[in-house]
Amino acid sequence: MADELDLKTLSDDELVPQMHDDLYDGLKEEIEEGVRILLDRGWAPYKVLTEALVEGMRIVGIDFRDGILFVPEVLMSANAMKAGMAILRPLLAATGQDYVPARVGTDGIVGP
Image (cartoon, rainbow, N blue to C red):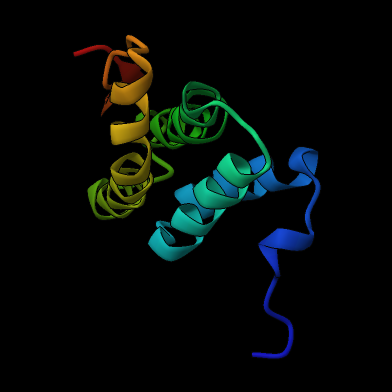
């Protein structure tokens, strides 16, 4: 498609909100690409997790709570997040960074 967005051309300040939108839309491949781009730009795995993925899922959780999104859309978003986490998980483990895997509840992002 000629009007496809090239994530590599976006600044970090543009890429992170785009990743929030891509999570919202359940775009797995775009999330994987965005995670790799941020890591290549020197972002710490935990920063990618919290600022790009968890924040995007927080938005999904709010809209689910408010009845804007329904279970199928939330599952698509969760699968996109899972793809991003597959890249980050071994990096987080290698750094010894403690993190609590988040999950989406009816009130947004909740702990384990």
